[in-house]
Image: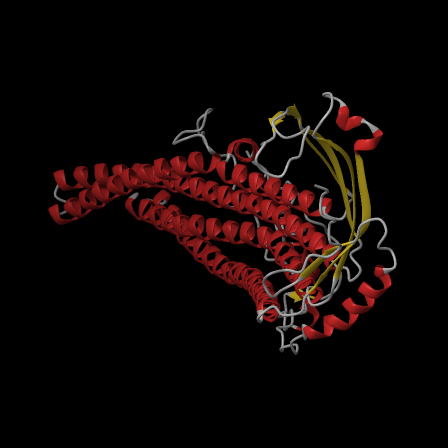
Length: 506
């Protein structure tokens, strides 16, 4: 029995896109099918575009007095944290960039996006596949196979090459590839944002560690002053010149200072463990955490003006921009789904169900064909319209996410600058208080040398100075953390003039 001829076009059983493949001699059908495709595409009617969210523009936002819209004269620096001039901090950050599990996860996601983009890009290239089979079969004597095949056992071998190439007339596939490339860019920017977040967290924790160690040192000085005062009060009480109440109050202050020292030691250990966890080394750094060399009391300054252009270079804003562009490309893909899709397909091979093992390679066993394949979206039950609405909503969500990221970045920058300016005013006030206490101490010192007073007033002014010093240390640490947040909020940028060149470790 001769095989039935293959129909050039098999209609789909379900309503939806119709797939047609033309073999060798059907070339005259190509213009007709293209014409029918253009006509039938009108059956899948495009939905009306809905209002979409617009991305914010920096030059149209109120940036405040400290942020200006002129182009930036400084660029982001991958080692922005080195401006704090502490070798131990540089070593910790370098170690963390190699071992942090957070960065390992971000890198893995970037690699995943790269693989997806490569797979999507391959859809634009010609696709060639080879398949084959080798085996033997016994043909039934009681069905469709006439002699000499009925009841015989023969080789049943085949090899086939399939080639396909998409014409991508409307650009939908190219838009899909570009969307994956944009998502890859978003993942890379997300990886950079994860690095920046880790660096900022490490710098802020390290500043907290410096703060606690400086407070410990200052508390130790307070203990020494209280011990000298306690000795003088005891001597004066022994000769009846001081009361037991004064002695009791000093002992109470001494106990409070010891408790504060113990609390600070616990805080130092907790911060050291937090730094080690961020670095990915457990609860302790491999080389330990030694006395920091960073100075909190250097003459830091709030920035005069910050270029708004630096905000656009933040990794998280770049990631939001890439996601927004990817969503726009996917809207393009959804819109092109309403139009017919035409691909070129070809096949060649050999099939033999009788003869020797290599009979399928004989010229008489060859089969081949070539032609276009067209897909027409005629009746889709609203699927394409729903997909279009979904993609437009995803674009709106991406734009909204970008806008929120931009506004959050602007808030971080403005908040850090405002904090630095407020801290600068508080520092001037504390400096004035310290200068006033120093003048008082100078007067007491003159009277002490003249024999008019004992040493207790001098030691009391020392306690006052140490109390002011406590507040100065806390203020300087808060300012340093605000400066670190500002530089990280600008994408990792060392701002000139905020830390003087003389601010170096001892």
